[in-house]
Amino acid sequence: MSGIRSLRTGPEAASASATKARAGRLLVFFPAVSSLLVVAACAGVSIGSTDISWQTVVQTVAGSILPEAWMDLGGVSDAERVIVWLIRMPRVIVAALVGAALAIAGVQLQGVFRNPLADPSVIGVSQGAALGAVIAFVTGLATRSALWLPMTAFIGGFIALFAVYLIATRSGRTPVATLLLAGIAVGALITACSSLLISLSFVNWQVAAEIVFWMMGGLDSRTWTHVWISLPFLALGTLVSLWHTRELDLMLLGEETSASLGVDVETVKRTILATAALLTGAAVAVSGVVGFVGLVVPHMVRLILGPSHRALLPASALSGALFVIVCDLLARTVHPPTEIRLGVITAAFGAPFFLWLLRRQRKEIGYF
Image 1 (cartoon, rainbow, N blue to C red):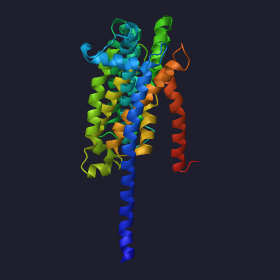
Image 2 (image 1 turned 120 degrees about the vertical axis):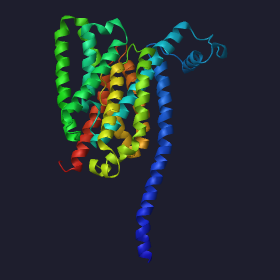
Image 3 (image 1 turned 135 degrees about the vertical axis):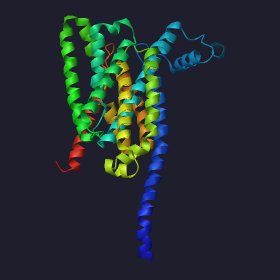
Image 4 (image 1 turned 90 degrees about the vertical axis):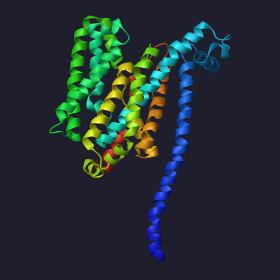
């Protein structure tokens, strides 16, 4: 009897121990990452070509948010207020929004494709948004208003998703493998169109340079307008993502299994793809093409917290925001006064991690 009892309690004890360990990691992870995010944001605002003390940063931010009667800004110069509130603060906030959006989109796509190597570029949204931005530069729309560039990028991303979905869907079903192949093909075609427009625009060197810099990603000259452009889409995408955490968990078991458990697979797939496109388009619209965030951040968080999307989504959002803020700070400070493009910094971190992840995946299936 004691042997039977031990067989019964053994798996239960192991499961309880794993649950307790996971809960302990959650209790440590969220406060730690949140604290680091606050520190990184303060560093992003205070460090630059003109260093500003953190006391001045806190005083300026509080004075800009709270009524002036509540704050004494006598020790803060007008130049410091402009640098903190109008130049660096919106840039740091945009960096956080971009990182969170790309990380959440990466989590969603990795869940739908059941593949840790999936990221927002696999469905062609990043390439479509880039083509929309290139069209805005070539036609001169980008110089008419600050809204035209993000608007055309956003529209381009959604048109690319619509084309991929239309190609991959047959009789109301969208196989994941077909969707992946269609995304790769459409992305390659869109990239070729962008390259053609860039080649033709080299007659105007200034326009060509702006396009190339935008394609490498960057957050220079970001204002509060860019914050308000991206914030509503990030909020909406995050809410929709959190609403579908259970379905994403079940889809990790396979489409047939999740359908047998009551998941409307095709509807959930369409919703998740549209949400990922919404988040990616909003991010690319204000930052240019920033790679590897949607690939690296979700997988690193998954290694720590496990695959449950209820914890993975908010944790990835915080981690993505932290990652992009730190990368943007490095882009501004590594080689002053020249600013390295943000996409270069994220690739410098992301590419080695991708190679390690690829090697790990191939070892698991016995290639080498």
